[in-house]
Structure formats: structure tokens, C-alpha cells
Image (cartoon, rainbow over all chains, first blue to last red; front, side, top):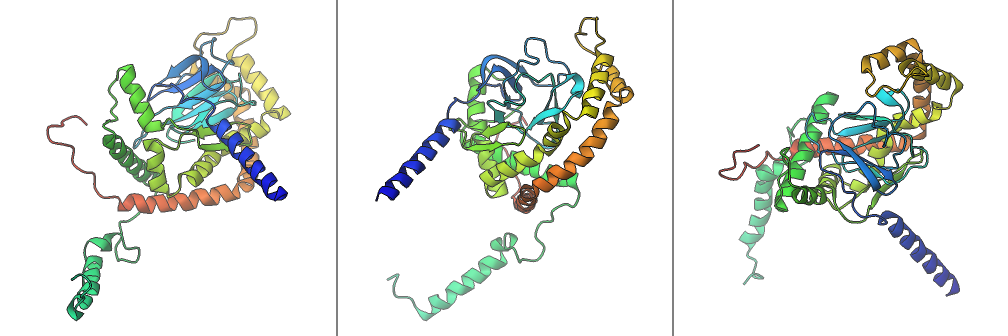
Length: 123
Length: 238
């Protein structure tokens, strides 16, 4: 019985932790057809959004980006994926590639590193 | 009365089933001759998948009284579209990449519903798609700190934004490309990426297999998707 309770408690904890992590933030507010970048994690703080490419983000958002969301609209032949780079004009490494509807609330490795992005039909 | 099955009715049932197979059901029967062909080329396949996904998304949005068009919307209307398209519930789709990024998505929007129908399992597809889509990002993260890459990138940076001069507001992309060639950055990255991509693809063999299997299934489903229903009367916009 003791073992059963312990297992149940562990399971409950795991489920709760999972739900908390998954549901910690509300839906990201990002216009449809746009790629959005926030200065804070979990889609908070100042937001920059683009419907097109930007080879060199403005200084207030470049290297201060902490969360990202792709709200592109898909369709045949439409460039709906977003590639994010750590240098202007895709000079550095690509840190992430997002399909429409995909978001990143925080990324320790890519935090405050973005400088440019392009839309493409794939990654 | 329904229980009083006559011998005739008993014979009629299999006959009706056979007739159904010969008519409407033959088009979805996997062994039926001449199922709709899946195109061979990658570009044609992508186009088929995108068209099918868009169809399913549009149908789902229409059921919620929303039409996805390119025309600008008022903020409230756009929020309704975002919610219906991308979902609003907990981010049940979640994958943490080797690069450290946790990519998430809602599982309750029309986009998620379309992927679930097309790929058969939106959770498995999400995982495979995010990992496969970011193989290059993962490979680049692995060689990012390689000394050869670091020095090539430093030469590129000095070329596009020479020290002592203010950062150009909008550097010329052609200049950037010239610098990438002349600094050796292009060549260095191509060399390092080839090696790292091989490694990364081997590490993610399982996800690559799942990706191919689910994509093949989606292509078959997309080819079977019935023709779009005509727009409602009086609707002249796209």
C-alpha cells in the first residue's frame, strides 16, 4: 500500500509538473501572418513582429530576444517557416527554425542572440 | 419485426456490402485498383501536402465561422483567427531540442486538427517535424564554437561592420554575401556542416524514420482527399 501511494504521488507530481510547464503562459499574442519576438521569456515585454524578412533587427530587439512565435499562415508555395540567425544577414548560426504555430518560450542557448530572420518554404 | 430476418434479407446484406465496395467505398479501399497517385517529386509532394493541410484548416475554420484570407483584420477579428487557427489551450505539444530550445504548440487549434487528420497522430508528427526541421540548427550549434568557424566569423564581422565605424543601419546583403565568400566563412561552414549533419542525422535516425513514415501516410491521405466543396453562393472572394 505504501509503495502504491508513493508511486501514485510520484505520478501525480509528474503530471502536475508537466501541466504547469505546458500551461504556464497564455496564448502568445502575435498577429496572424507574422513572426514575433519578445524581449522577455514566455512572450512578455516589448514585442517585435514582422510579416516579411529582416536582415538586421533594430537595436532594441537584436540580441535582447527571449521568446519567439511563428504565426505564419500556410498554403501551397507560401514561405511560412521562419529561420532565426544569430548574426545579421544570416551570417552566424541558425538558432531555430519554426513552422507555423510553433513557439519557443525560452531558450538558454539562443537567449539574447538573435539578429536576423528569413521566411522560407522549409527549414 | 426487425428480428424476423428472412433468408432473402440475409442474402441481401452481403450483396449490399459488395455493392458498396464496388461503388463509393472502392475509392478509399487500400487494395482497390487505381488509388489516386502520390506524385514522385519532392516539390509536387510538398504542394500536395500544403494544399491538403490548407483545405482541412479552411474547413475547420469555416465550421467555427471564420475565413482565413490575406486581407487585413481588425485586432479583435485577428485574435479570433489566431485562437481558432493556432489554439489557446495548454501547450500540449512540446519538444526540447539538443540546442536547448523547447518548441511548443497548442493542440486544440484548426492547424493542429488538420495535422492530426493528415499525419494520423499530431503528437508523433510534431516531435518528428520539429527535430527534423532543426537538424541543421543542431549541426550549426555543434560547430559554432569550432576555432575555424570562430575565426571565419570574426573575419566576416570585421568585413561587414569594420571596427571604429558606426554600425550600418541596413547593411547591404550583397556586401554581406561578398564578405561571407572572402572571409572563408561560406567554405568553412559548408565543410563543418557536412560533417556535423552526418553525425546529427545518425543521432536522430528514429525521428527521421518516423518523419518519413508519417509523411508517406499523409501523402496517401492527401491524395484521397475529396475535391474542395464549392464556396457558398454569392461568395466571390478567394
